[in-house]
Each structure stands twice: as C-alpha cells, then as structure tokens.
Amino acid sequence: MNKKNVIRYSFILAILILGGFLLKPQSSTASTAFCSVDYTIQNDWGSGSTVEVTISNPQATAINGWILGWDFSGNQQISNFWNASYDQTGTAVSVSDIGWNGNIAPGGTPSFGFNMSYSGSNTIPAEFTVNGLLCGDVVPPSTPTSAPETATETAVPPTATFPSTAPATVPPPTATATNVPPTATGTAVPPTATATSPVIGDPDCTVDYTASSWGSGFQGDVTITNLTNQPIQGYVLNWDYIAGQSVTSSWNADVTQSGTTVSAANSASHWNGTIGAKSYKIIP
Image (cartoon, rainbow, N blue to C red; front, side, top):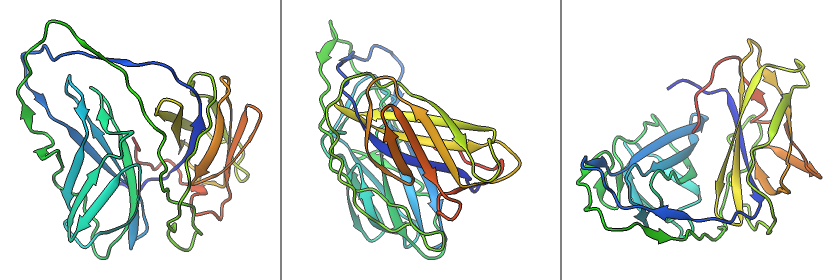
C-alpha cells in the first residue's frame, strides 16, 4: 500500500436541509451484489493506525439497520471509535449502526472510523459481512410491486467521539468531541477553497470537499493533495460559505470562522502539518 501524503481534516457544519427520498422496488432481472466495503488505513505510525470504513449499498432497495463483521489477521486492538458502536472479542469485530445512520438507501455509503494499536503487521481484513451476508455475495432480485413506496428520511445528529491531533513525535492520542450542531438555514453548497503554505508560497494543489448530511446539519471532510515536487511544510486553507453554514467543531486542523470566511491551519511541526511531494493515496 502506497504511503499517503494527503492531509485530511473534518468538521461539523450546522445547516438545515429539507427533503426526502423515494424508495423504488427493484425491477431489474439481474442479480445484485449485496454490499461492498472499503477499508482504508488513513494514517499508520508503526504501532497503531487510524482507519476509515465505508459500506456501499449497490442494491435497488434500502438496508434498514446493519451490523458489519470482520476478523483481524493479527493482534490489532481497537482503542477508539466514532460514528458507530463496536464489540471486539479476540480478532473478531462486530460494528453496529447508531440509529441515525442505520438506513442505507440505494447507492448510500455510510462510513465510520477508529484508532487501533498493533505489533507486527497491520493487514487489511480479507472478508466482511453485513447482517450475516458476505459482502460481494449475490442476492436474487425482488419482485416488482405495482407502485413505489414513498418514505421520508429522518436523522438525529449523533454524539460521537473523534480522534484529536497529536505531536509530531507521537501518534495522535484519542480524545472526545461533542457534536451538537445548531439549526441554521441554507443549502449544503461546497465552498471554493484555496491553500497557502508559509514555506513555499502558493503551491499547486487540489482540494476535495465532501459532506455527509443527517438532516439538520452535516459532517464535512476536506482532503488537500499536493501536486508539486516540493513538500508543503505547514499550510493555511481558506474558503467562503454562501449559504449561512457555521462550523461548530473540528479535528485534525485548527479551524476558525469569521462571518462566511473559514480558515483551517496546521504548522509544519504539527503531526498533520506536512504534505509530501507528489505522493499520495486516494481517500474516499
């Protein structure tokens, strides 16, 4: 697995989003894979790592409530978890939804993350199951109904724990952050962002801004990719909102907001403050 030199941080945004979705019966005559799982090691410091896991629902019907299971191949031990609940017995891990993210609509991709410690190798698990079915297995198509069923998606913002920043000489410690987003109005519109570096000036870079909504707010994930031949040692990322969004908490960067303008910064000495030159791994 290639070492990544991509800096990622996240924050909670308070914004009111009104809407629903339509659940349509499966009408295809072809069979569909039940699920797929993307297990990404975001940061590995030799004796531990931070992992993000994303479940994808490729079916034409929703998955109502989910339990994801896998077995570690080594002595990995989970120490901190967010956006789901878990149980680990030996190498066996069982992860459950926490209500607000329990419904996976067709094409939906809920994700969660955790920190863990280990010694020796840190191999990605070979197989995953959702609700007892092996991901990648094929399920027969359902019988079409006469009319689609209309349903309204509701969600409750969770209180979750998140990994905090850590010094450059040690892996990031575990910490907790309370997520209580206020109600605001507007639409979830990704902002225009620019990155500046106090060391090498204005580098050529790309910024990936994604949002995961729960109805009255959403979690934003931002990834900066360095496209130059020099490392960025310390940076400040700026953007402006246009729909009344307000950042209520953040992690993996120091985030400040003045009006519509948001700044996210890390110094070169910060564990997350250096972006290597043209060497990165895609983070979903």
